[in-house]
Length: 260
Image (tube, rainbow, N blue to C red; front, side, top):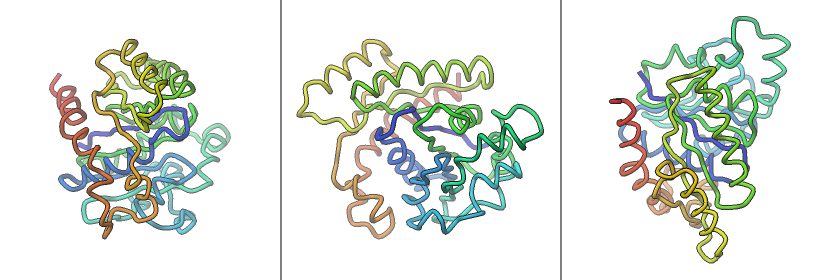
């Protein structure tokens, strides 16, 4: 059965999509992976598919959730990487849940949608929107674990506590198996002294939950949405920091939780 990992925090510009996309790509070099875009901006869709999000109108995660079946809406990226795409109409998901949906707890719609394909993948990676809404709750309720992205800024530090509280709520009320794999510091500008102070604050408050890896700004990584992962001469440089993070920190924690 697939291991489901959500990347999230309710703060824009924290490298959620970049991290989810790169980890999906890197995992697909060794495993069968499904990437799931739960953000109506569709940035993960554009990053991995290298196409306009409107090319997938009517064939997205929204339609899959309405049918509670992901299978008809999966798009291939490579032989080992598939995608559940998103576009603007995903923003209507809350309205669907509370006006049209019938059939149980609305927090479990994504979980039930993924259930028919769980045996087909080793990993399912979910990108979430910068908001604590129904898409994020559904992602957490469907997941085995969450990686929390932390841009070292004051607003992101404020968001961190609220996101952790949301995870605890989901653990207690919806998904007791949900684990926090860790907090990944991203987008660090080493020239600014406040970034180190904010990183130290997070390490002091959350201890070993904060990964040792620090994802720093790189031009090659920033150009990934333009060039994608295929036939991109910069792809090794763009993903280099994440290779070490995946192998030395994330995968050991995933396996540790599996064996606990």
